[in-house]
Image 1 (cartoon, rainbow, N blue to C red):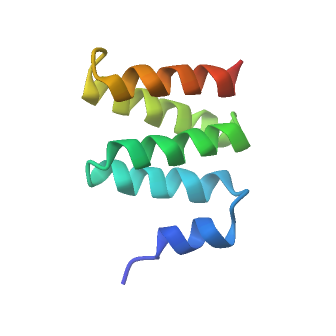
Image 2: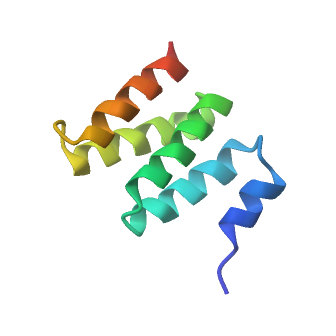
Length: 84
């Protein structure tokens, strides 16, 4: 049985790795908005975590969705707010 990543995040809300792992799982299931939420939470908690892996994950989701997708535009703003 795989780890319950939602429970891991709930138990460790300040762990960027937990948010990152859950974000990747959600992205793999094409749950884009939830994935972006988790990945951006990971960036917010630790911008440098795993050499910027969460930020790169967010950018990969943007790449999949495309620049004209409303989710991409919304979360680009949110990523900018977290980074700058």
